[in-house]
Length: 79
Image (cartoon, rainbow, N blue to C red; front, top):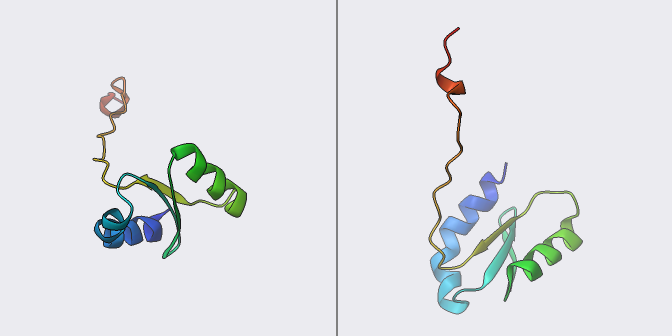
């Protein structure tokens, strides 16, 4: 899910950041939908345009934060 959107963002992020530093982008498929000042604005536009369909929102220039999901030992449980 969102493979095309992530690939599009990766391919164009540097270019978009030069034109719109720090702004939030909405990407659907292989296209930039728009750039927005706030996360709320980007999410609102994406939800209005695409409803329950998936779309990508990212901030230009932001460093990705690592995600840590505790497993509580479930991945190493003995049978």
